[in-house]
Amino acid sequence: MAALAALLLTGCTPDSASTTPDDVAGQNYQSGDGSTTLWKVADRTGPLDLAGTDFAGAAQDVADWRGDVVVLNTWYAECPPCRAEAADLVALSTDYAPDGVKVLGINRQDDAGTAQAFERQFEVPYPSIADTDGAAIAALQGTVPVNAVPTTVVLDRSGMVAGRILGIADPSTLRSIVDDLLAEQPAS
Image (cartoon, rainbow, N blue to C red; front, side, top):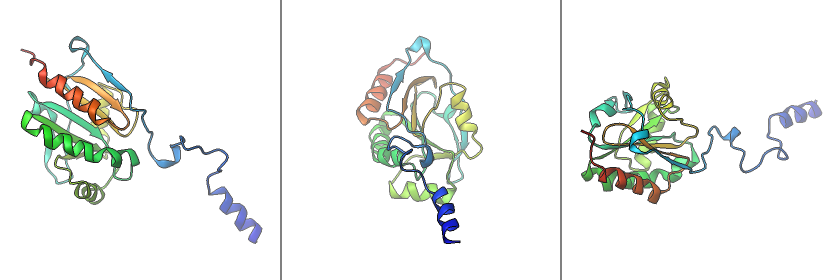
């Protein structure tokens, strides 16, 4: 009986020979490599239609922010890279708010209590859409591939997809993208 129990328990633990530090399949997220894609004005798609309800129950719609640069970030509370970049996104949101930059999180996994605990812990000043039905991610996928969590998508003032970062967003890279979009003349 003890041998059978040991055999069953062994089947429930990961095989250390087949797991590498780069293997994130068992960690419930696919990590990006930090790669950045930028689109020239003529090649941008959109405007992006993305709306939902945030964890406080308020409606959020990126169409209301046309004229502003918008930073979208997919995340969930137990995602290690999401936790690692949280302080940088909070700083970006705070630093660029006077310039008309909006930040919106998209969380497909967490319930309101878990998401709000994360937001309190990291003092997140911007809303996050509760996307358990996947509608926000589907809207993004129709415009720009979202291949990892976190993924950060930056919209120009017209709501067009201008940039994407897969994985942790390097703060200087993200700020450079935002600065370039703020310097662009709005489309007439």
